[in-house]
Amino acid sequence: MAERQSLQTDFHPIVAGEPVEWVIDDGLVPYEVALREMEERVAAIAKGEAPERVWLLQHPPLYTAGTSADPSDLIAKDRFPVYETGRGGQYTYHGPGQRVAYVMLDLKRRKEDIRAFIAALEAWIISTLDEHNITGERREDRVGVWVRRPEKSAGVEDKIAAIGIRLRKWVSFHGISINVEPELEHFSGIVPCGISQHGVTSFVDLGHLVSMAEVDSVMKQQFEEIFGPVRVIGPSGLAEPEFS
Image (cartoon, rainbow, N blue to C red; front, side, top):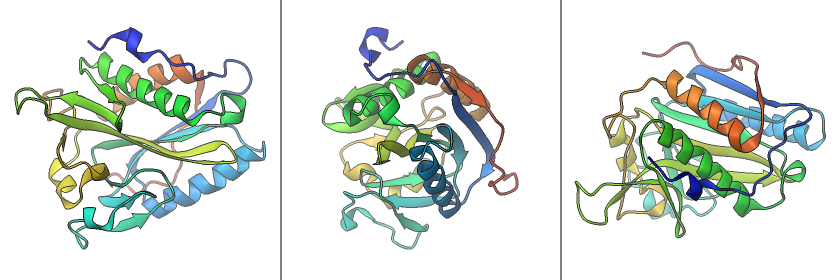
């Protein structure tokens, strides 16, 4: 199990006032639809016209390019759609079997500190993995959450979760992705996050057969531990029909 003391964070939860809306979509949400919805919600939060929101979803297979993306890291240009995005980071993959959580929080009400916010997101992921007996670790020189793979080679680590955020008027959007059971071969079309010396992994790749619903339940519990209470409001209505 991961050491709990390593997950301490000084990010501020909100324990009074309106809870964070918690939205889960079971179908696939097109990326451009999700981006438009996030833009509208972030603007409303910044104006004080809407509550904070966390939106859990899955996307059809696609690649996204962050603000630091190197074009040479896009190996298979025509494999999946590629979306330019204003989030931090480089290239990443999204697709079925990967839990994406878009996190729309008002940091003015919490703490105007992007490093503390990223550390809190890492702690959320690590504690979620810990509850499933997976030891995830943060690294000072690379964003995301990593799993040691000594059975592969000495010093080799695989990335199990990515983080890419953007702030507008101190309201966050974009967020995190956790590999539950995606097609890992799809990551071969890019150099994930610009890091070629390590690989990617997932719950299933590590031998942990869990459902997305089980992961979601733990994510909700661990989110409340760090960020404060949530209110489940049901699906967004923007997902495509159930996929096979």
